[in-house]
Image 1 (spheres, one colour):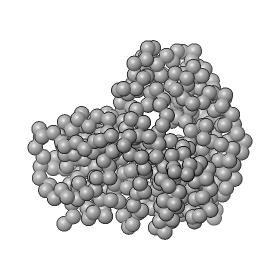
Image 2 (cartoon, one colour):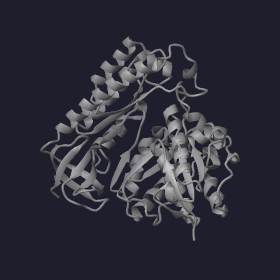
Image 3 (cartoon, one colour):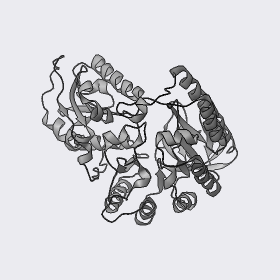
Image 4 (tube, helix red, strand yellow):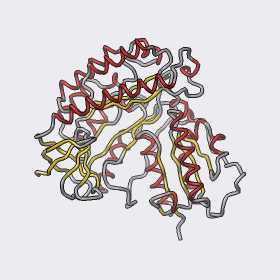
Length: 441
């Protein structure tokens, strides 16, 4: 009988793509996937370390798995494993710690481990972590082949690492320098996904807009998007997060006019204060960001436009926070991912003066979330009585189907439909977080 495993992912789309690749590799090695860690002989935790809260979530998951399934062997990988392997190796139930530098060794490591006996509770886990900056190429992950993974909206990672040095960010030190999947490999991956029934693909990366700059013959992100559209039969391409300086006029036009690209732009902001952006070592100013965003809205009036926004960065006074809030209020956002500054070990921001008290940062977080909720409500309300395209995701517990619109709105459909179907729906009303509609074609 095959050993069973379960992969749990934390964090960004790139991490989710890494987790999907690990699943496929383990299944190709003969291991059997289960729906939960409670039923698995091996649990693979693919971690994030962008905030202290992300670290805490991973530790809590490890303890919960060990408590509920003491015989389960836990392998911890991902960004937290790369940053603090010894910290994780001491946790109960952890049998292996494998950093991002050695992720390609997870499948052979687990395939060779045939002894599934209870762990010695005090035995520290072996650690496999190396120099992430030694990696200069990005390798294609194996394609999906009958894995049973839900057949909707897979993430295809085409870029990893980051050459930026934002003062608050630990990710370059755990992901390495920017590396791109060569164009021919991207096309091969997309073709394979299409052949296995996928209809919408989300292309992702750590700094996606920098795709191609490191290749022997440098290329630009717009070339990648155009090539996918010309050379593959994928029906819908969705772009994940792209930095503001990489939203060129050509990319905006592609997103706004090509029927096979989702009307969706995620443009990280972090702050609307010029002083804070400089302290963060971000590579744009508020005026430049506003120019890009308004150009996107002008070109695509119904597009979803979102951003990551940080509160509580060191030196963020009441006045600078209000400057940021007013800037955000003036722009056509439809959603925000608001998070609170978390001092990451080894980053310049962790040692900066003017650290913001936790209760003040929480209050600012709440203010921006309320602002985002109102902008999102107004955006959703504007579609009542209109017809939107969407892809079905899964059936509800009761009657109906969950779907996602082309412009990134959650949609509840009145009747049951199989996943992975494109539909047109007339929007009838709002729900607490999205829209409700009736399929018309």
